[in-house]
Length: 289
Ligand SMILES: C[S@@+](CC[C@H](N)C(=O)[O-])C[C@H]1O[C@@H](n2cnc3c(N)ncnc32)[C@H](O)[C@@H]1O
Image 1 (cartoon, protein in one colour):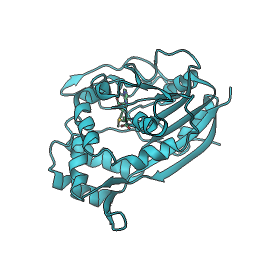
Image 2: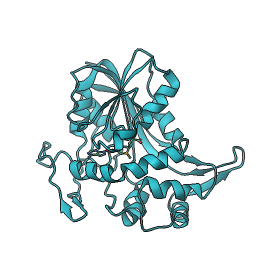
Image 3: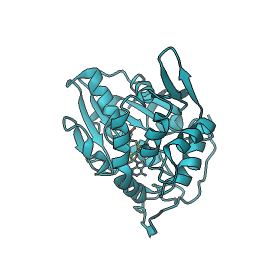
Image 4: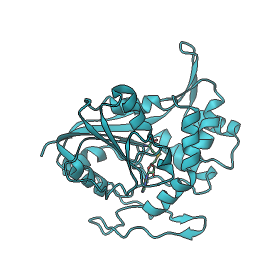
């Protein structure tokens, strides 16, 4: 397979007027390996609390997203699962609900305050995603949900995952795909209404597969999946998203209406709930070496 090389614009690194230097790591083209590691970490340090409050208020909203990722992995109670970046531990909580205390879970979250609400029954590591203080081959499964679209180059992240995975270890990853309405919403409406803006570098078709192949991970699946968010009432869409994305300059009603226009919201009479269209690209594989 041939993949096109993509060059992305220098990311915005201003946060409240401050310029924060990236960590100085370079990819093979000499680009900074991390688009905006420190400023993005700072953004989530700043808005992680609102994100966690939104998730606590609507714990079922993103269930489709989470289930679609967990279903890609064949997990058992003997696995050591790594959730990275874990945010407030949402993916890991889904695992605990399925496996009880059996499975050993480690959450890696770069933004310390964001990870402060992670369930203490999980091991929590506050570290950069590309420099996790765990031994080579020490985990048997890795899950990553919605945490890669602020990396300019994802190669160092996949290399770190390949290092951490034991032979035959599994990887499941999901994030926003380039060119989708979800991407347009984040870099459009969210960018205009959150103080720090939103400058996502979304996932290209074939990119996850290429990165897995380059790192000795055999590709099982790569697919764009509809994973609508679920709400009891239409107005909950705006209440949730205003907090989750820290949309300071739009009212809840404006947020709901903008989402209806860009993504679409539908009532599902059968379940008496509302669906907000959302789409992610999912990929999975297994380490062969
Ligand atoms: C949208 S949250 C997802 C968190 C969690 N997996 C979930 O699904 O709720 C984005 C996560 O990506 C992390 N993140 C993304 N890009 C990053 C970067 N370049 N440097 C550090 N952290 C980054 C943030 O700290 C945060 O945990």
